[in-house]
Length: 193
Image (cartoon, rainbow, N blue to C red; front, side):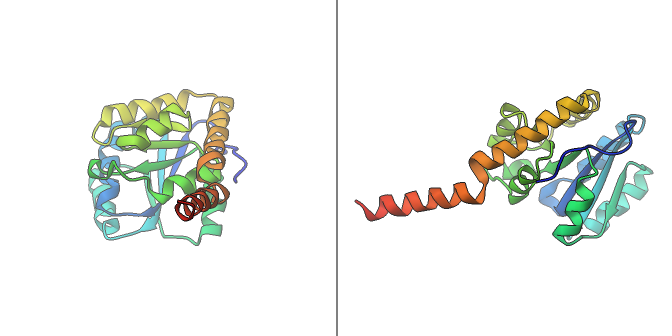
C-alpha cells in the first residue's frame, strides 16, 4: 500500500494511468476531454505500452494539447515509486467490456489510491457506492470532465478518505487472502455434496 500524499504541486492535479494502451481502454477519449480542460491544471501521465500507443501519441501532438504525457512502461517497483506522487489513478474501458473487472482495478485498490474512471457496468457502481473514486459512464465525456473538476475541488482530507476507502475495499473483497478463502470454500462445498 502507498501512503497517500497527493502530488507536490497543490495548484494542479496529476492523474496516472498504468498498463496497456489499446483500443479497449478508450484513451483516445482523453485527447478530446483534455482539450476542454487546458485551463484546469489537470494533467494525465500514461505509463505503458500497446498497439495504440503510437496512434495516441500522434493524436496528442495533432491536437496540440500539453496536459497528457506518455512514458515508457516501467517495472512494477519503479512504477509504484512514481505513482505515489500522483493524486489519483485513471481507469478507462470501452462500453463493450462493461461486464469485466480488470486486474488494473484491483491493483489500483491495493495501492490505496483514488480512482477516476470512465467505465460502465458493475464497476461504475462499485466505485461510486464505495467512495473509492469518481466514475462516469464510458461515453459520457461531460460527466467525466465534471468528475475531474469535482476532484480538483476536494480537500486533501477528502482525497485521503477516498484513498483509504480504496484500500479497505481491496482488503475486504479483493486481497489474496480473501480470494484464497473463497476458493477454499468453493472446493470444500464441492467435495462435501
